[in-house]
Length: 275
Image: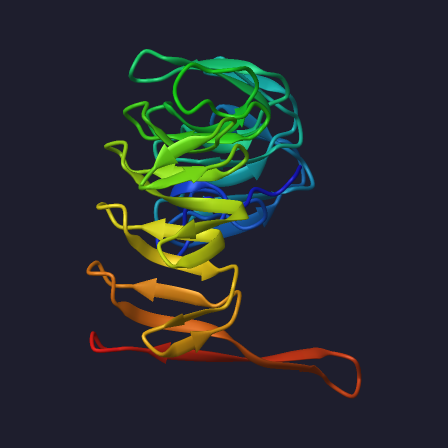
C-alpha cells in the first residue's frame, strides 16, 4: 500500500493532500489508543480484523480506532481490500481504508465520482473525503485521472491535480499543478512543479494564498532581494496580508562531516512591517 502525502497542511504550507486527513502507519486520530496484537481474527465494526495484526481502541471510550482487515468485504457499497489498514470514526464508520476495485460515490451536491482501487477516506457521515480519480469528471478546471482528489462535505472540491491550464489569482497554473480551494471555491494555494512568477518573485513547490489572492507563504525558485534583504533560491518566505515580509528561513551553510554525514545550518529571520 503506497503512502499518501498531504496536499494541504493547516500551516504553514502545502504539500500533497488536503485537510491533514491521512496516515498510513500511525493513526492520525485524536486521543490515545490501546493496542493489542490479535491471536485470532476478530470482528471490528463493519470488517473482520486480521489475526497477527494490531488492533487499536480508544483508551477512554474503548471504541475501535484502527485494524487491518482479514478479508475482502463490501461496506456501504465500497469494496474493501483484504489486508487493508483501516481507520474508523468514533461512530463506527470507516474513516480511511483501501479499495480492492474501483467504486462510485455520489456527493452531497448530487455529482458523482469514480474512485480507483486505492486509498480513500470518508467523512463520519459516509460522504467521500478523498480518493484517486478513476474516470474523467466534469468541471473546470478538469481534474487529472489517476491523481488524488478531495472534497468538502458539501461536495465542493477541496484539492486536486489539474489536467489543463487554469487561471486564478492573477496567475496561470500549468496542467499537473496541485491546487487547493476553500469551502467557498477560493484558491488557497497548492504545489507547482515548474516555477511561476508572482509579482517580483519566481516560486515553485508549495505556496499559500490569502483570501484576496496575495501570497501568504512561498518558496523561492530563484534568488531574490526584498527591501534590501537578499534571499537564496529555496528560501521559504511568509508575508502578512498587507504584503510585507514577516518571516524567512533558508539554508545558510551546508557541508559533510568527517564520517560522511551531511549537515546544514538553517537561518530563520523575522521582520517588522518596516522591514
